[in-house]
Image: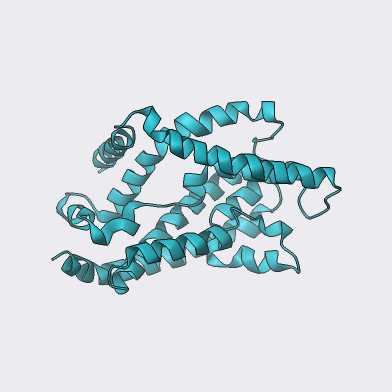
Length: 256
């Protein structure tokens, strides 16, 4: 099984880089275009006497690390495109569990961007005055739990797509909007007003990238984050496995 997983990941890497490095430049450029203005906003707030639960240094690190690990903090797979092409049929004809296929393929697709964007930007961080070293080593298991939960949500949203009779694009747009906001990767929960951070922190999406980033920059404690991530991983993975098993026949029937 391990050999199959590695082979699938390697094929995903080759597929991602098949058009050459220049093919990835638009994605890299978009990440930079997102990162620069947000960092400028945080620095401007710091110069204006900004006061909140997070320091400007933490906000800069939060945004910077999120950009470096964007594929991991918000997991997206090819599941959202399943029901209008042949990928759903291919997944069931290969001698490998569907869950393992999706996870290994997605992780393989992460590698080129991690090497071509995340690594160089990590080396450039000190020159930009940004701290990227984690405040606690608990950030590492938190990232693993965040990635695991992200895959579980992907399978759940795939089931939603199947139940809505193949409206893949609508499901993808709704999913992207909901997860981006409620995960805390764009706006840190700690700077939300009226004590909203507590409510957002413990809802399911709050255990995604925002939980990891909060630990990474030291704006949250491990005892507040890790237990919630473990609980939501258990709950969501059980729900995803059960619902996906019940949805498989509907998905295959749509493909004819």
